[in-house]
Length: 110
Image 1 (cartoon, rainbow, N blue to C red):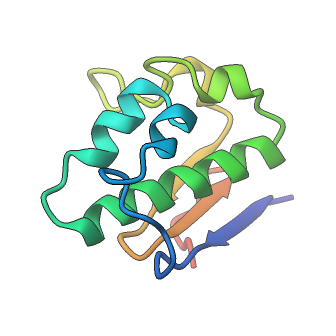
Image 2 (cartoon, helix red, strand yellow):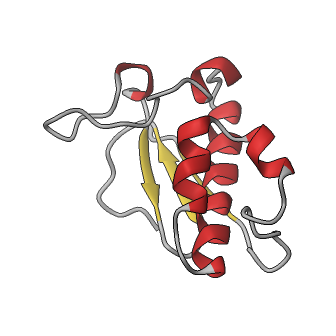
C-alpha cells in the first residue's frame, strides 16, 4: 500500500529570515545558511517554507527531532543517494511551497 502525503504552505505571511532573528534559533545551522543565501526575499521565504513543510512531514512520519536537525541529514551521497537515516522516505519539493513525502518512489507526485 502506498503512503503519500502532500504538504502545502503559503509564504504570504512568512517573515524574511534575514530580518527575523528567531528563525535562526529554530533552524539547524546548514538549513539556516541555505535559507538566508538567496538574494531575493521571496526566495528566502520559499526556502523557509520548504523547511517548515519538511519538518512537519518528518515529525508526522515518526522521525525524531534529533535526526531532523542533525548536521548533514539532508546531504546526498556522491551518486545522489539520500543519507542513511532518510532512505525509507522519498522527498520531493516544488518551488511553490509544496512538499511530498512518500514511503516508496512514485513518478507521479501530484
